[in-house]
Each structure stands twice: as C-alpha cells, then as structure tokens.
Image 1 (tube, rainbow, N blue to C red):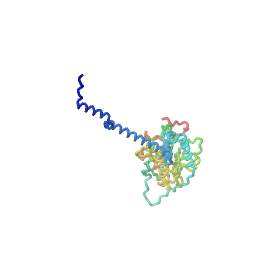
Image 2 (spheres, helix red, strand yellow):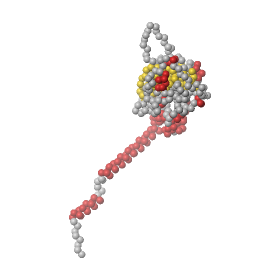
Image 3 (spheres, rainbow, N blue to C red):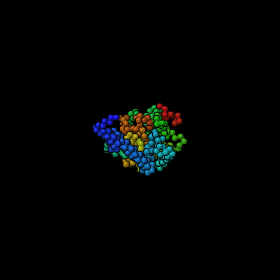
Length: 388
C-alpha cells in the first residue's frame, strides 16, 4: 500500500492557526457585540440609578416633615381643581375627606372675628383749589415665587357695583359685562354651582346683593354665610354675617365666598402650607384710606405662572396696606378686564373666559347703572345649573 502524501506546510499552518483562533480566550469581540454590551451595562446603570432615586424620593415624600408638607400642598392644589379625587392617591381617601372638612371648619373660624377697621369719611374739597386728583384706577403687575398676576387699585370704593348677567338661564363673561355697561374695569366675583365643572354660571352660591337689594338668596336653612362686599359708605365687609346683620350694616354690594384672610390689619393664615394649595386666585382687600384692592393671580400655566397659595395672596395684600381681605372665586374664573373689554390676565380655563353669575365692576357714575334682577321670581331649586 502506497504511503499517504505528506500534508502541505501551508495547509498545516492554516489548520494550526484556525485551531488556535478557536481555542484562544483573548480573541477580540466584534464591534457590534461590544456596542450591545456597553449599551446593556448603561441600561442597567440607569435602571439602578432610577430605582434608587425613586426610593429616595418616596422616603423623602412620605417619611420626612418637608416631604409631608410638599405632599399635602400638592393634594391641596388638586382639591381646588376638577380632579379633586386624584388627591386620594397622594394622601389617601380618608385623609382627603378629613383635609376638606378641616378647611371648611378653618374657613368658618376665619370669618368669626368681627372686623373693626374704619375708612376716612369723604373729604370735602377745599374752595378755590383745583388740585388734580389721582386716576380712579391703576393696574400693577405682581410677581412672586412661581406666580404672576395683577393688582387693580380702585381709589374710590363707592365707584364699584356688583353686576349680574343680562339674560336669564346663563351666566355672562365679565368682558361682556364691561362692554355692555361701559365700565372702567371688571373682575370676577362670587361662586356658583358648577356641576362637573361645566356649569352654566347662572346659579350663585349663597347671597347676591346689588345696590342694597337682595337679588338672590340661596341660604336655605342657614342663618349666616360668609360674604365679601361693600357697604353704602364704601367700607369693605367680609366674614360671617346673617342677612339681617348685613341689612343693618347698610350693605350695598355683596356675594358669598370665603375665606377671609386678613382682618383688623392682621393675616389669618400662618404659613404657606396652610394656604389651600397653589391655584389661580382672585382676592379683594381694602386699605385704611378706603381704596379697594383686587388681586388677580394667574395659574396652572407652567413657564408663565403656576399659581399662588392664599398665604401668598395674603402677604401681597398686606405689603400693599390691606387691613381687610377675602378670597373670591378663583381658579379658571379668575379674570381682569379693562375699559375696552379686553382681558388683561391669562385665564387658565382651556375653553377661555368663563360664564359667571356676578362681577365687581368699576364705573365713573355707578348710580346711573341699572342692574336688572334676573333671578326675580325664581327659586334656587328651580334653577338647573348645568343646562345650557
């Protein structure tokens, strides 16, 4: 039998090289595999870091005093919106009910102290002098921590009238009220029944008084209610009153809302955490000289203005000399309108300016303004607040 031919040196070398390549543990990984491995390590790193941050945030949010303060402020903010039920996911359903009840009780107590502030009597003009008086109104921009707004000053409180919609069955935009009546300025006023946050703005809450006459009485069996208004001498009234008390005090213009946040020159809210969350605000106040202050703060608009707590509003008004102040209907109702019927601020409502039952308007000659009572002959129970 013939011997096998010797294997070529080249083939043997190739065979050895291939075997070494297979067996070598130091063989370099292909670029694609190295890239996938790097991405996987980065993914795990970010995942672990994210979980760590979430855990640390949860510990701070739920187990530390500062975290609890922030958590309840966030819950309070949700309570003031149409998504109130979401607050239960932050503080629990039981805590939500307790929180709302706590605020109701607190607001009631804040309206109990009797206001004793006085304003100067109307000065008689000196004969022979023709001093130029200040403008009746002025508007100042207001900025604070996370919020932007406007302060309307009305130097003669007797120039303010409470105006209601012109037609039955639906509220009216403040810009429409201003244009219709020829007012100098206007702001939103009292609250109203707002089923599913889609109310027609026609059913007020509590009392509506204009020109010293009761236009709407929704007190029912209640003997007293929190009001915000002005008497016939131009003095601002705010707090808890019965209808008889208001009549005896000579009330001229008033709506129901709360809470009163300044009385007898002192603030009633101790700190920001007690300020009922962050939201758009409308607040009315009065200085010692009688000037009325309307503070409108925009909100729910990141990058422009998130909103303010009632404590923030209180501090702004105290810094501007308010001796009494009370909350009006804020949120998406907050609006400031100039004499051209133009909206000065940026309302937060996605559908634009809201239809409302009442507005505080400023006039050069308020006595010449006729405000018809659109609720005459209607019982509160007969009004469908959600029917358009």
